[in-house]
Image 1 (cartoon, helix red, strand yellow):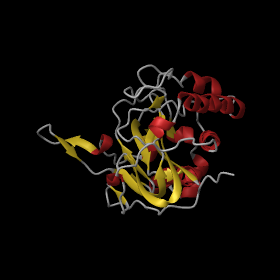
Image 2 (cartoon, helix red, strand yellow):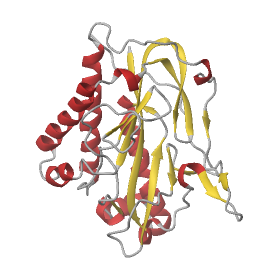
Image 3 (spheres, one colour):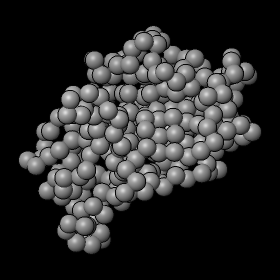
Image 4 (cartoon, helix red, strand yellow):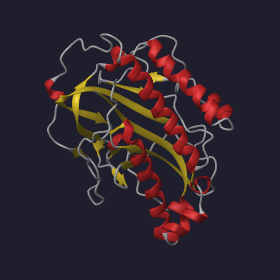
Length: 301
């Protein structure tokens, strides 16, 4: 039994005339005090399954009263992705409704393009961890969060070959071209970006600015940096793009894991990586819902 555990980083510009001046946490939970010293700060919750942070690399391009931010999900089982997208969308409309009427009214009046946009400065990075079996417990770390899942981690940074990573990218291109043809031209143009998500031509473990970031300190996690939402302007296409992504990831990793000795661990994972608690470093004035592991597993034949 294999689980694909993911975390999403959504970078975007939003319209403050609708969403207001949302409380936004400091980048990666760090800020500067009056003396200019780096200090840890609590992150700010956005609904039950996300936090929101500043990101100085993002630019405002659309809204006269625009603001940029990065929205970060809790780690989740990939087969449960719609719950997290729903939480993001619903929190958007609840926030607007608090200023402009009922949720049903604002959902009818304002579409995605009225509220937010994904411009050339934005991405939608996906962090990936693979777990196998159900006997062990493993703490998946992602940004400010740690959550316990059942399973033993695959050393994904070593197991994910260049062929596998390139197959994911090429399959994603084919599926977006087929299922979102109007979006594909601008989306494909934005897929590879120098100094941000350059095309990976060989495995590199010390360069984070490639389509696949293998330089994370956690050997069991990799980051898909080329994935993005440029060209997405409706909620329907937003959901469709993530459906394509997670279907592609599930299909390719499932296929690879069926192969004899595929992704076999070459070392024991560190005892310090196991935690028997559910934690989230957030502003507790708004509670994040920390769910226990669910049975949304990839079942291999």
